[in-house]
Image 1 (cartoon, rainbow, N blue to C red):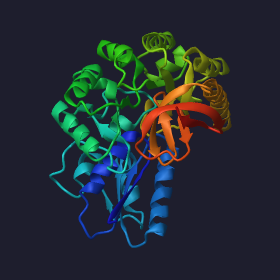
Image 2: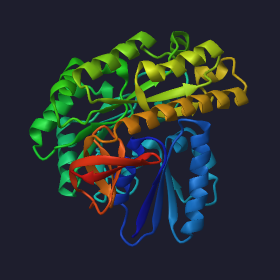
Image 3: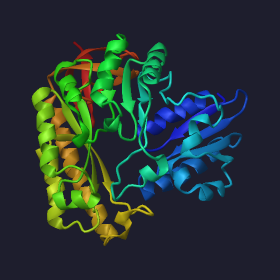
Image 4: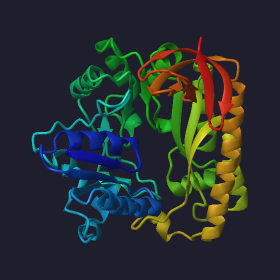
Length: 386
């Protein structure tokens, strides 16, 4: 193997890293680190990953790209382990100037990620990603269709559409999904990455209600459950709108499951405001979460707001995670005795349509079928083919 990838952060990074790797020159040893800057911790983990890669493969040259490298290029160039730093604009052409702008998953993956959009036109006060990725750019339908076809040719059984703000896709995310499903009959499992709830369009709601090939797990970028904090974050939805969106999804698709991104300890957050976010777990029936302790990113409005004590921020994040974990465990337990359609992604392990992790003994990679759930081991359900 002449190149390997280390991706941090969002699924878009994973998709991009695979495209970069496929264009690496033969005979040269490279490690491509696609960095993340969503939090200060993500930047720290990027540096840690670079040092670890160098210790593990001292013979390889390390190329660093991604959002952290874009926002603080000089600091990565100064790292002795790093051979090259490439900004986000040129990352897909790091090795080959003729590379297609479409970033897609690896042939080694049963679930493959295909980028449909990049950048963001919104200005959430806590976020620096728009600075690293630039304005929203939607990829042409034909390029996305061809990328999906290539991934299916390589053995992908499920396609996940990804990007920075996929609900901001230029022609409407719902219409994009509809066209893809019509153009590629081999696409039997289509999944969506993180959605901005306020941007879900009517066409997508129609697909949620009537298209079985669209997987019924929807991860929403909610961030908070208090209206004042949402306003100070410069989010474009209210708490009531988030709850109404989830209610509409579940009315359209009763088997739908909901995940969410949530930030704990945003500047000025009171205990009452934090409790409102805690209650959102129940109000939106959230069964999977990404909980982030607030991290003040440089050159963002939120970093200039009155900050909370770090110990309080961590405590609130811990409380939110604990409550979310209890809800998730209760959800998994409710699935005991049910029959779930499962895609096996690695020997003996896979996910249900609703994205519950399922272990099936002796199941082969790429298998899909109905499994009867007979037990739970930690965060995984145990199933047998029905």
